[in-house]
Image (cartoon, rainbow, N blue to C red; front, side, top):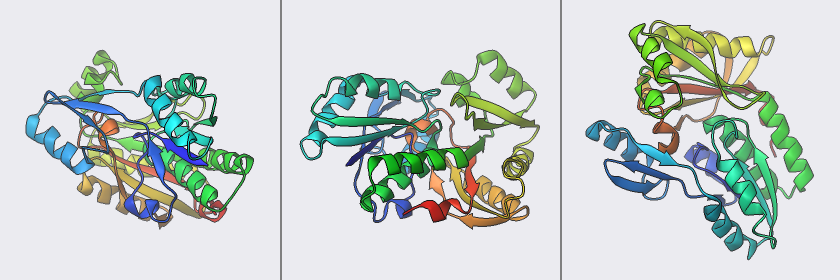
Length: 288
């Protein structure tokens, strides 16, 4: 079985170790008049450096059905069974493109999976599937595992500037302008009902938003003595360490290595984002 995913999935180098190959559908990003293929000719580190140097707003384009068709056909020559795992359909049309493409590649047996999330929480589902494939699990067992991971995992993030969310259309200009004028820092999650962004709290400073995010994580898992956690940041190690400290003051933590948000998601957040992926620590025991 081949696993296909997208650049909305943020895996640390440590998580990738020992996994079977993951195949990424191309996702394009344009910054300062030059177009890149995220993760192929533009690393996260290079992207955030260019973002600060140019001061310009990047634009992204989701993969089209043709991108998927080309990838599916190539992979089907080696193995017709393909599991295609993607960013929330409530946030991107990527899954829809994959669905159209799947109907155009009859030689492949393509199973589509909506993670209903993004970044590290999406990656946790991809990693679980890849581990299960390596362990020789059957497709139905892999899907049941991903469903369990999806139901147990929650992601939260905040950021110190709204301008990239506003420019990228992820938040209305009116709401974004009002939030900026009032110095509001939102704590954002992704709804498990429709896979769209939801604001769970608002604070007047970035530090307070990080503290509030830690509280919201613990509130999400009442009576859970230990949490499996992974810190997420765009280009903000200082903010990430603030969140680590806040979490450790509230609950027992089983930390995964932190992960940097890739360029495709970073284009919509800028360099200040800090976030976290969370689940009960017992989730680790479910993984092969």
